[in-house]
Length: 363
Image (cartoon, rainbow, N blue to C red; front, side, top):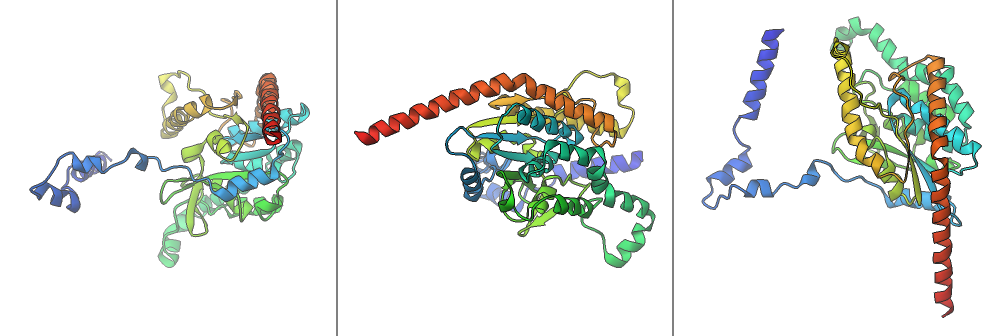
């Protein structure tokens, strides 16, 4: 094992200190070589390609949203099964008469958001998790693959190596096709699924076409599910770049964006916590996600941040699921006064703008 690690380190050093690319080498030999020129050709935007929000997506939200009052759009973030807290958010808003005019969802937030926009009540969505329907659908291909793993070399010899991912996601897609309409147009409320284009790194917003397939793509955790191809493009989980899609909700024309953050709070833990590779990987993922989501959380009009640190990435425990939903309900209840105040202020502003416009037209 140590020899293998040493070999990999040597390879890394060799690659990083190898010869310059041909184009750079040619520049260096040129009489007019400027050492700053190569760096000057680079733009920081290549590190984070811009988020793609199509005009069609914006039109869909504008057409289906009310014109006589401020539009409230929910931004449902990812967070593995911590996101079941978002069911509690929906429950609380409904119970208190807060109208939801549209939803943008990432990862499991896209599943919950799509089901709600299709007309399913929060209690019905909860049942899909409590009776393990969602969990079984997600794990279907993964479990079978683990059982057949010893036969993999023979299968690869005959069929060739499979595309990256433990599961095709067919089991989950089957559930989505059963519970959701075929396309976005059939939804009762505007909805958009956030995905990542794995070929160019771009965050994309899907709001037309095959709805179940789009939701599957938004849930496609790399290496667990294989990338989903839609219109010739390969998509994976939107949480890679837009785990909290509040900025996308704003770009789609929301007057008030209510964001739901289901990240784990980063608290000090004992050194003994990290005795396995799994514990280290999960901790690293939590830290990276929290760092990426923090600025977006601060930029939200209204932020709902339920305490769901106790929820594992995947669970069939009914008690944990119900507690997570209750946490979402409780966190939402705390910000209800803020939501109402924001809506009143927006409505007053819109009324004033309308009156000013009418006066100008009369003149």
